[in-house]
Length: 248
Image (cartoon, rainbow, N blue to C red; front, side):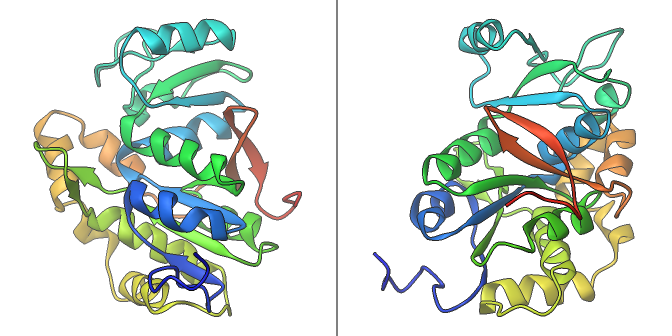
């Protein structure tokens, strides 16, 4: 409903968390940016920088294998490991993915949100720290922009708001320049302005990865503005799109 109290409709730039945001707000947005810093959005950015295509998929089961066959693609390992030519949700594993490679990357959180937003008719982007300015430039021509920090999950499946996703969303909002921001979006941009990326090396998500031996992934996830390409979901795949020449 256009007059729902939660839709942030008076504002150009909006922010709300997780799958529920896509379900309730995406149908009134022209552009949706999904922020899943550790690690799906960072993986997408690294792969798109190399002109590889990432096909998101919500489930880590045999359906991912069938989806890969349908799209003439490989499927990433369901486990976060890296050895040889095995691609996974570890950003380190995707640094050297070749141009033109088509990879199904299962991610129950970010992929589910992306599909829901796309089904609502919005243009869908994947954003993170490393491509925050490029993402802002690619979204600049859209009137109604919704930022969705994906967050993580507690063991019971409930949403765990993740500070890295919130601050990366705020970073993108700050890079959009002078826009009419909802209080939620304004707070995220202000939080980014007052934050230190160095502190995020000690946030809960970073500590989890470090404890599992993926400290290199954390460094990749927290690199700011090192990519000049936005990542847009088109024809089932995230593809590289120059931030300053987005086609609306």
